[in-house]
Image (tube, rainbow, N blue to C red; front, side):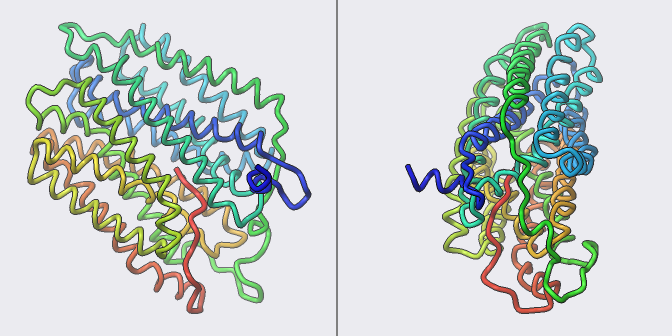
Length: 426
């Protein structure tokens, strides 16, 4: 027990276990909202009679909220502190969730997208602040352990959101007149839960801690290079953009793929299979820190990306349960990618660390742009061919992992050391 307490004790002697537990609730929240989101594509296709291309704008609205709010969220944290930034994020999330009550009466696609966009702006604040905050709630040596514990809460939230969504949202998709009325149930619950969190965080002690690296130059005695000239960072942003595009496409169209390729499988049953896939995703995150402990992170990233590319080929070529199992397996191998890309990209940024982190969160917009494209391809060429988009994205991520060492050595002007440690996750 004493060793656990030390993991949350800063150099001033203060313990932050309670603060960490509160921050973990934020990981659980955005995981739940993201899991719920993946049920909406298939639901809106049925309830509003829209195409897969049009349903892809569910992710477009959501991730555009992340894109537009990431930099302002970083500025809010710098200007007003972590606690104020978290409260602003919670207020925006609650407003978006409560909006679903009148949105079900308006009953237009635009009304629902507006609510998702507003929720995403709030979650962007929480994610931009909570990820780096977990790394400073104790000794730097245990930062990776703390973020991986928080990531587990994120995975649990994602599984829960997917399961509840499959029961409440997808259960009605085979009715003659599919209704959007049931959407207010989970989102009203989110609004109430977030309101409670606002009160709790309002009274809680959330110290405004800072990481030492944020205040020191990238290297003593060396001139500071602009971010645009750091190839390991710029290609990291591109890789993050494309990875999130692949992840979002797979998450969003898993149900479509399963229903089309397995005879007699209902939307609700497919949603439960996807919840099982999210269990593999969470398991991958739990084991991810061990993987990068005995392998260089860039090699683990490249290896996992290659495996996922192969799984996409299987899904495209085989179909049936073989294809569904391949997609489920990809969830496990996607698990380490966001934190690993993040850690590799921000290595050595020194005083530019916070700006670099904000830009990497902005790269999540890849999920907004590529998902409608994947839906467009699926509408015209079939659901299997749509997975050519994730295949191409994983190819670029694999390349980044393979050449990261050379890029980082060139940017640092030295041979580098044994590899970056994974400290941040999505």
